[in-house]
Image 1 (cartoon, rainbow, N blue to C red):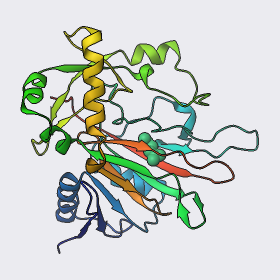
Image 2: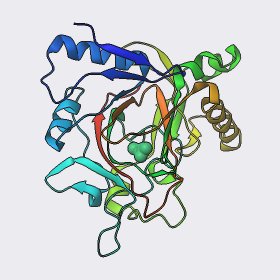
Image 3: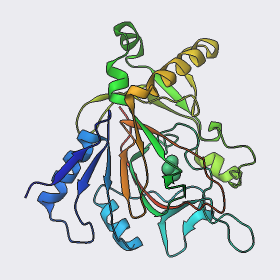
Image 4: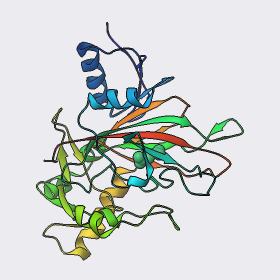
Length: 285
Ligand code: SIN
């Protein structure tokens, strides 16, 4: 039976209507995967998922990453990373409080960056009936397609250098500093600026100014303005979809064809709690 898929009307994003607590056969999973590739960001509303269920569904897309910041992993299910502004009785953050506060694509600092991420909304802040803590996504296929031909030609075959520690953080970020071992585990890595989707063959831009420190073979004073120009082009409003969270949303996004930004317009006692699973992808080409 065909799945019901409701496009958001924006440059990306759709709702898929299905109850993920039921078993999903191979044909239905194929429909979900196709709708996911076509829409880049998909939401499954009103899901009631245990951690095991979220992990099992996520694993259908590939092997799961255990996040480098170990402090915020669920102790019994380390495949789940807590993203949250909530503090425990000792006043410590229970999860990553500044995840996604700059534009990025998940885990671009690895040789094998994330294929996709899944975020399950447990608590969502709101004020006067308005949802806070939205997440904005951009369609980087459209961003690539709308570049001037001369720029597309110049970019062909070029690689940007991604640096994990270069990521911009919020001021006074509570996130633990990377240890020497973690820094050694995440050396600079060059990825194609124009990448080809491993499943669909579609080309997209893969570069952000928060993560990319240069372009291989290009002097830094030339490379930085190009990275900024590409970044600013990617995040134009016409390429965006803004997700307004509801409790029990499971949202997933394609890290090869989208960048995202989490909006921090809430503070305690407004609470936000998300469970993230991150699927490892293939080496970008
Ligand atoms: C993330 O970048 O993984 C977090 C996104 C969000 O919390 O909305």
